[in-house]
Every structure is written in C-alpha cells, then in structure tokens.
Length: 267
Image (tube, rainbow, N blue to C red; front, side, top):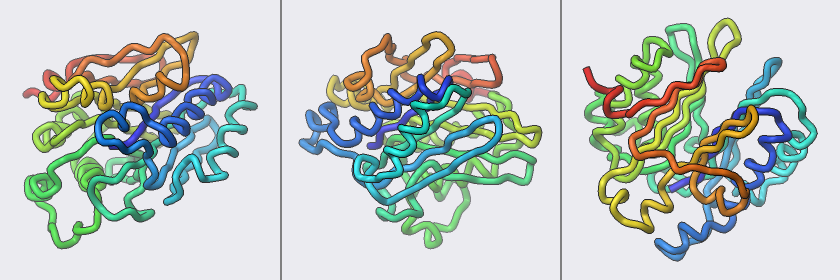
C-alpha cells in the first residue's frame, strides 16, 4: 500500500507536506507495525499544477533516494504562488516494479479534458478487467491501479461529481483493501478540478492496525487544503482530521463538496 498526498495552497505552505511524504515513504511506523516493512520504495511521481505550467514526473527510484525530490522541495519552499500538488510513493502489490506502473498516471479523453490519477490500495484486478470488458492478456504486467484509471478514461463523459462518482461504482465493487484515490482534471479553458475518495473494506475498518495505516487525513489551514496518507501526521504536526470511511470530496475553484461515496454512486 502506498503513501499519497493531495495539496492545494501556496507553494511554501505545501512544501512541509511534501517533505512529510518523503519521510513517510522512507520510514513508516504504521506499515512496520502491520508487516515489519518500513518503506515505500517502488518508485514515485507527482503532478505539480500552476497557473502557467504543469510538471508531471515519474521515477522508479524511491522518493527518498531521488535528487529530484529535493529539488522539488526546494522549489516549493521558495514559491509564493498558488499550486496544486498530487504526489504518490509506491509500495507495489500488483503489476511490475517498472516506470510504467509508477503513479500518477496521465490520460487524455475524447470528451475534451485530461486527468492525472493516483490510487492507494488493492483492487481485484481480474474482476476489474472482466467487468470493464478489457483483454486480460494485454494487461498482464499492468497494475490494478492502471487498469482502473484506464477504465475511468474510457467511461467518464464529463467532470461533474455525479458522473465521476457513477464510474467509481466499479472501483467499490472490486476493492480488496482500500480505494483511496486522487484525480486531478485539466479542462480546455485551463481550469482544474479534483476528485478524492477515502474508502476501506470492513475488514480493514475493524482492525486497528489496518485502519490506522489505511486511513486518509485532512488538513485545512488559512488557504491550505490537503488530503494525505495517515503517516504524514507523524512528520508534520498540524490539526489533521481523519476522513470518515466512504468519504468523497469534489473540488472545483473555491467550491469544496463533501459526500458519501456510496450515496453518490447510487442511481
């Protein structure tokens, strides 16, 4: 299971959160308590969106061993502009440990928008392939996260919360552990929107160690907004709050809408 971060705010305010992600990937006490493993070493990536540019980067190096991560941190520290950062440090469970499977993934659609997608958790890949109507032999080395992102790219008709939620039904149906996701949409007029989900299966929700490791946390502070994996609370002291299981969040401009993912995915 991976460590993830979605953050919106001034670059210098986002910087400590990214630093906490790096430290979380290098030493994760919550993961160690579950299975004696301490790191998320199987590559990392990010999308950094500003008003004038977008930077998408992926590497098979661990984030804590990649000089590019330090460069990103330093650039954020000195940045007074508004940024959106979505970053992912991978601990592989399915799919090859190759650059292909490093997240966030980027897709362009025929409906006039593109998006980046990241996922923390484990889906039933075979069921997902079958229900999506894909060919399994073509996706042997792809991760379950890539398969689900591909499904989204082929089925989302528009970026309204109702439409996006409707397409997450398949993700809910095939979740083995968690469906913690971040999707950042870029629209033709240059604007952006985001969709975030926090979901874990009952088995995880009722096991203290699993719940503590799998939950997402939220931070709101003077224009800074972030959702992140739980481990970041150990490396950045702030008024984090744990998101309720099944929460979905839609962000568009200054509007933030919060609802139950299960309800949103209904008819």
